[in-house]
Image 1 (cartoon, helix red, strand yellow):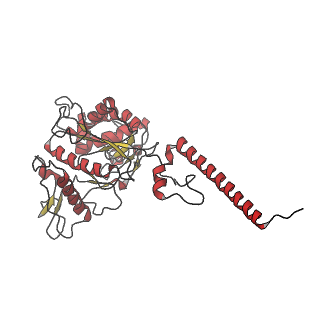
Image 2: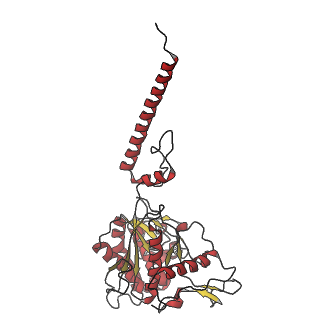
Image 3: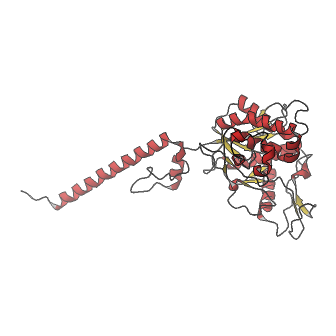
Length: 368
């Protein structure tokens, strides 16, 4: 029998390698298609599984692009007051700047305006108008309009995305936000001052023992929260009703005060059996949070008062200050003075971001 020549053996070896390579590639591609078509939960997992060339690994940017994004719609409830208007304009500026970043899963944006009437920023900010509560029903607590606004918006608006981010006018987005929720659990920021266990006696009026332990009530408000649209549609009417019941209850009204509506959302969620992933990295609140860390949002609800030596003087007006309440009647001027040396990076970054937004909004006018 004739012996195979050496060149022939080389040719056979190469052919076997090619066939093996093509077979492995086909299997990998088939697995990749199966994963992407059968599970949206692959987001956040190692997307390289079943999706890379077995000899030449797919570049990171292409692997990221191959994972289906789970977009969420950002919704901000607001009044037509000058105080709310300028905050919404700054918030929307940063949303637009970061929305299309590769790491973002931010989808559309809506300012849910619960004044019942249009204002001068309808062309600048995507806006959906809803009715306020009837006169006197909020008992001077305007925040009760928030759950009522969401009820109306969810019933009437066409919302493309399957998830909702409930945000507020005084949020500044620092970096692209991914979808922090899962199919099973929404994501929320835990507030240190929402303490259901400390107020169990009062909360049992609205969350009876038959519904479960008090720890089922998460230490959260409605914002920031990323939640499935279908879950929010169930929760929102209960959130409105519970909040109004709390406001009508003298004991609950006294105990919960300005965070009553936040407790209303936490209780409503628990009544529907919805619990949240608690994400401390969702946002920071200067001046108490001094470092940016790996956070997504700055919430500037507190005043920032400092001496010229950079010492916090909370509770008294500082030699340098930034407090949104200084501008209740209209927008702040462009180019606010930066804090003195020694002030934490969270406060410095906040003022720089406000200044960037106001400098780049063409129609920005002080007092508007």
